[in-house]
Image (cartoon, rainbow, N blue to C red; front, side, top):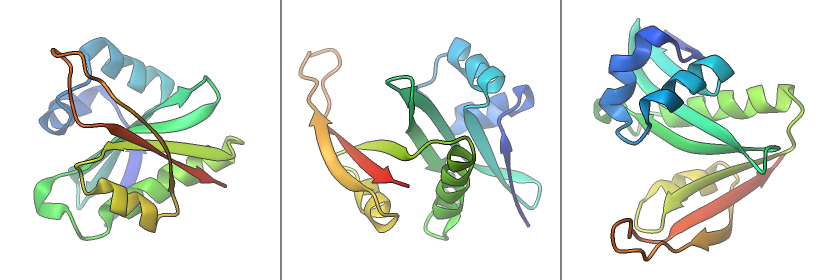
Length: 139
């Protein structure tokens, strides 16, 4: 059985087992603003999705992560579709995601109907990483 719900305070340990990038204050904001989801299979949390509003008006998925042993089984698609449906129900008409160019997630997002729309190069030595590519989808 699969369930998807908004992130709650009790999810903190699970959340940080998958998401090493979110400051604790932002975790609390995700709870308050309902901008994070937990995917649960048979009473066990196995995935998460968090998002922000880009330009304060466009839902932007900032992280989608499914626990390793459950990857490749369609749970990422289920979680993305849940998020997209929730955003549609709130009146949003366009979605954004991003991934580094050296990550395979870009292929996953393309299968969901997202298309490339730009990139960001961070070349400051302390923060340097491969280019972050942005992808977009119209409702």
